[in-house]
Length: 55
Image (cartoon, rainbow, N blue to C red; front, side, top):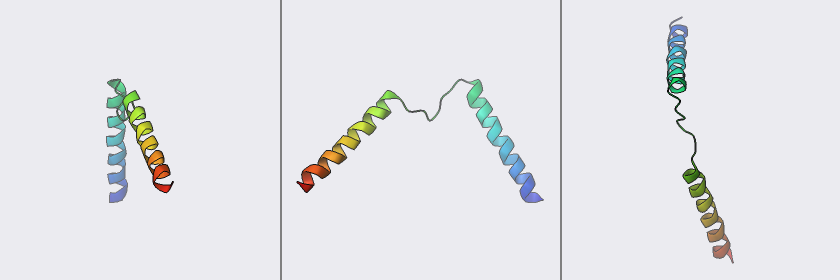
């Protein structure tokens, strides 16, 4: 029974956090253009590095 109450409290806490994020029009954790560009650059460096190393 205590686990059920603890789990219900955790669900309420998470719901409050999501409602707070939604009310503030924040997009935490979303990727920006910089993130995509950095990921693309890292992918290219790793692929080209492996290709040159194996050649």
